[in-house]
Amino acid sequence: MPALVLLGAQWGDEGKGKATDLLGGSVDYVVRYQGGNNAGHTVVVGDQKYALHLLPSGILSPGCTPVIGNGVVVDPAVLLSELSGLADRGVDTSKLLISGNAHLITPYHTTLDKVSERFLGKRKIGTTGRGIGPAYADKINRVGIRVQDLFDESILRQKVEAALDYKNQVLAKLYNRRAIAVDQVVEELLGYADRLSGYVADTTLLLNNAIDQDQVVLFEGGQGTLLDVDHGTYPFVTSSNPTAGGACTGTGVGPTKISRVIGILKAYTTRVGAGPFPTELLDEDGEKLRTIGGERGVTTGRDRRCGWFDAVIARYATRVNGLTDFFLTKLDVLTGWERIPVCVAYEIDGKRVEELPYSQTDFHHAKPIYETLPGWSEDITQAKTFDELPKNAQKYVQALEEMSGAPISAIGVGPGRDETIQINSFL
Image (cartoon, rainbow, N blue to C red; front, side, top):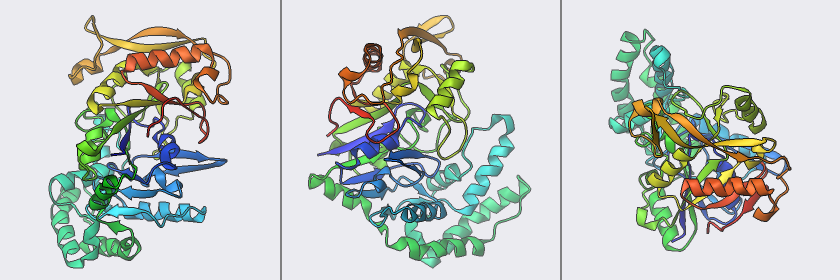
């Protein structure tokens, strides 16, 4: 059963797009299983750079069928804009499939997201303001609108009316904003129906049949493990489950059909938005990592916070996801440092802690305990095998593998599609 999950093992932005694209030529389906257009993947093909937000990275692989699963929240305007942008660049987008059970992000979701974040002031979470959280909240509250509702005007209108009965009260009385007209929302949503109808399918049936027929299906997570709403640094998290379990609920494929779970690790650590970050660097090293690594959010445009590699987080990701492999990205960014610190444990209230604390209070007060590894100055972007890496780069990778608890099966040594060292096959 060649079904694989590929997910972020830190706070997102680890380079999942590059990893997915690397496998794209060998898989039949690439499936986004959660999140929305708050996620972003950058894929470099030749001299072309593609920034994907909602679409699966497999959209760039001609032989692959990209799928948006039921666990994703879809902003139809963003989706159509992204499809149009790729088509203008000569990318065939006709094979995309969208689950009819995926929920829609509506105009009132984005409005509520922005005003509520401003209302929180200093307590803000750092959302992208794209309506993802409110859309997931409506899903759980059973007042959400699904893709399939676009094709039944009566049901769509009833659902919009039900949602706005309450939301307009909140907008007017709490946030002092104008009410949103039902007709305006319904008209906008109906305008997407014809353009999306050819993409909608029973993706759960399709994917299960594909796996039963020995086709290769790759489940692609957005964000990262530490942003998982259940297992991340709550409340500074996303509104879905980027962890491996989310691949099952977000697609309707059972866990017994998944054969491999691949975690993407950056050779250092970054995060976007508010929340605790034990290894964060607020000095020249942090700025150097940000500059060399091009650490600016693909979707948000915000500078990423940067820090040294955190092995405690990597071990946690291995545990909660059942990781079988790691893909280590951006090793080339560390070229030029004479010594490279790695966080191996935390100090909390004077005690050494080697596993991620379950208490939010403890994690906020965690101080990194570092081991320092020798760096390298040689250019590694042309390396094609592990043995071609400088000895100190090899030692760095081996140390991270030992600390993280799963084998490192591939290494990114540059941004290009071909700048990857494959140690073990994922298939």
